[in-house]
Length: 162
Image (cartoon, rainbow, N blue to C red; front, side):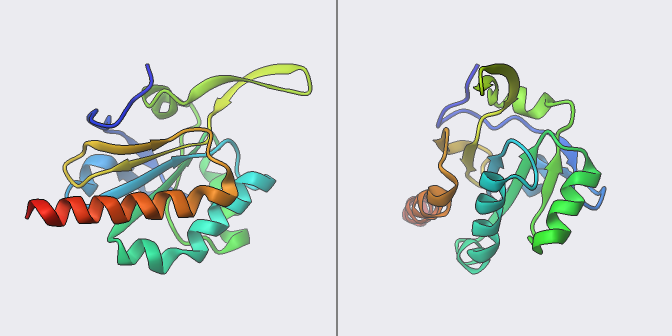
């Protein structure tokens, strides 16, 4: 089942590119940008990850933590981070359990071949753990502007409630 705005974000613990555990619940109180990507060091995924890297100051200004999740193993996420100097957590979901929990482990087709993989999807999770925005089948070049606009709206909504 696909998650939608208003749903509670499922908790998880995955290893980052350094082998350290990262739990969504440990980030409660912070806005989290959780983005799922198909495979480390492929053209679209590199464009998307380098966009996040290049907009680091914008994400920090929005007080948001960005987490990238792929079905890669830690070794591959580590190599991806090192090659491009990404500098934000890349989480290894090699058994795709988290992708399944978020409804982004989907049937895909390429060159007439069917396979299962991550749908390029981003969830903006508010400090209370509730999903505020979902961007499905995101174009890598458009990712940061979509997410940063959502963070701006969320910041305004959160400030209005204070």
